[in-house]
Amino acid sequence: MNINQLLYFMSLAGGLAGLFAWASQGLIVMLLPAGIAPWASVVTAAALLGGSIGGFIVVFDEKWAGNRVQIRWVAMGALVGFCAGTVSGALHLPLRAALPAALPLGVVMGWMVSGALIGAGLGARWLAVNRARVAHGMIGGMCGGFLGGVTFATLSQWLPDISQALAFVLTGAGISFGIAFAPVFLRSAALRFINSGDARAIGKLGKKEWTVQDGDSYIVGSQSADLSKSRYGREVDIYLPDASVAPRHARIYSKDGRFFITRHPDVMSEAGLRRFVLKVQNRSITTPRELQDQSLIVLGRTTLMFLAKQKPERSQ
Image (cartoon, rainbow, N blue to C red; front, side, top):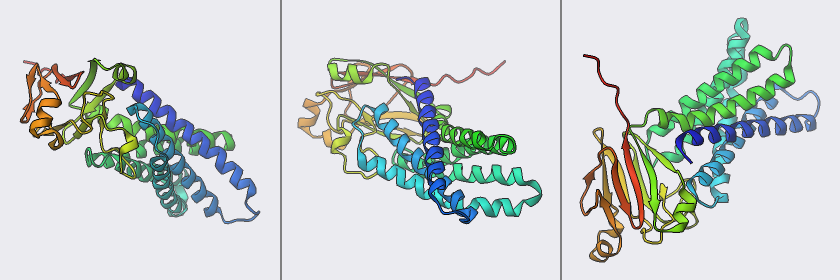
């Protein structure tokens, strides 16, 4: 799956999460006793939206990475999203009350707060790769919340049910798209799967690409999610199902706008150097090596290509 496909399916996952949250919220409202306080339904809606997006995004992210979906990670993603949604839902009515003369603005701001908090909570899943991912999630979520809020505020007077459904779908899609798009937009380079001598890697990775940006630090290896002890994220960020690749084979990281690859400490022993292949441009790597545009990286029997983002030429 290439980067464009990632953005499309991430948005689709978020939109489906929003639709699921809207349907669940409608069912719960029907079961609630009459005369319940307005804040209860608002908080419930935001919490369900956050929990649904959190669970759906984790499922999609693991499928995209080629891993088996881990129930504990899905549950943690849903819990993080649920908590963020609950907090944001509690802020909806105070925002509307603070802006009585501009109710649509209060609605839009309420949805933006929901999107920002939910996005930040989900962005925390990638803290080990880059701390900026929390800000990416927050900004993406805020943009998604803005779209949802504008839709709801614009159409709620004429089509209350449809407007709410559209707001949920757009907010979910916007948050998911924002979380995925920020790293793509800010990327300085990409890693592209080229080929492998292991049939599993070919079947799993296909046309796979990974974005790389300044501040990122990726662990590359063959350790699947099944063996990870983390409660929320992967221990190996780029999963290569190649029997010749060590569980933790290499690390790709940036420093001062330049990108490097080095062996993981697990394979720095004499036995590891003999057994696990790591080459750049057909040269074996034992110390950090800077990556250049179109550098070919061989890990075990798998080949990746490092592609630096082309910078626009300055006019003379």
